[in-house]
Length: 295
Image (cartoon, rainbow, N blue to C red):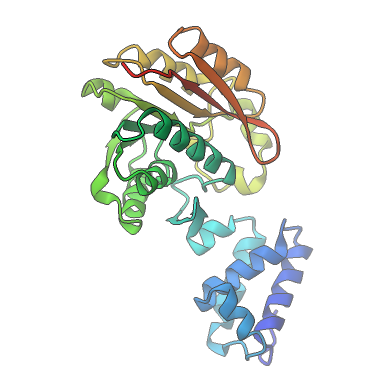
């Protein structure tokens, strides 16, 4: 597949062409990410050294990386990391790959939290830690907040704890293993802000997901029950078992689910404002309920 005399640029072009022939989406971007990972270079270094010979000793590994991507494996799992909210997160098949649309939820939660507690330290709980993208990003950007997070998967929590260490906030986040809000109900935690990006794919739709998602990302983090809304129903029911209702609740939801999730929250008659936030593609993606006055 590779010629011994090729330059870095030629290696990139060859890989990009190979992945394109295999019908890999964003083939050139994937080839660039794989090459930077292999050489341990950033983009600037790669471009500066574009015409240097490709290292002979890396040819076999370079072929293996391309074959893995051609087989559909997400490039983020191959390189072992993904950027989110300006931070780097380690990822592996135990956790979902953080998506750009979730950055919008983090942004909204931080904005509302700062508005309600301009000089305070609210207690924020994230449900479904995964890689830790949500709670870690918030902990980094809101150093006075008390941040907690739960996941039912011990493997996911291991990744989240490593990422908290990587981003310098391990001492400031409490990670709990448990089913949704159960650890916080058990300990009767007084939650000010609840945020979650739970599984929201209807079980019957899992088979129709892109192969890259269906075959490589954890099903536990995708399956939202018969209609995709099971986890939202359970969390909304669990809220009544806490010492108080959170002043802010923020959920990421699946396409077409904002109305149903908004109604679940509205029926409790707790929050004065329920906003629907669109993602980068203009799709209604987040539901944020806010009670303007603390209690």
